[in-house]
Length: 161
Image (cartoon, rainbow, N blue to C red; front, side, top):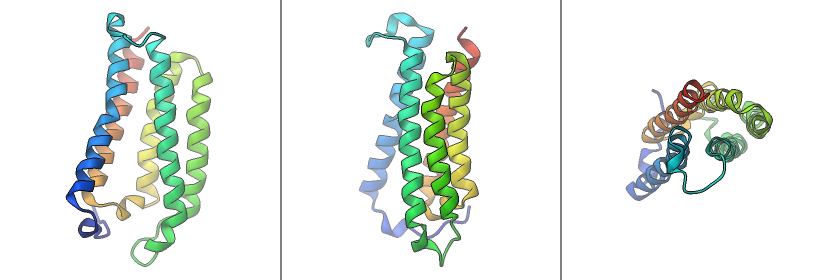
């Protein structure tokens, strides 16, 4: 994958911190997925699928916010990569609205839509060429995290009645 050489600007402590928080963000997804399959594990109370969906909306909004910021800052990379700023900003708005609107969809359908939205974020980053502004390790991390979260949504959608 062709990326802008940002590797030298990012020290190892930032890489390890971002990786830690990235994988740490998977823990609630995994926990509430397990609670959906094994209700006795639920120590929080409440419907684990609803909490899973709410957390999903929060994380999608966070990702949408980062797309918004990159859309605003894309001009700094114009010489190296043609990032589609307007597409990023519109995508960020639409993604956040869809993420929160998904709360009002019937539970099982919302899981499917939520999984698709995580794949959409990943595709937005690809299609707007934003990933060319990321260090290679971050592009790889984002792909792993996005695929993991989308897979959890789809697996729960397939297994929960």
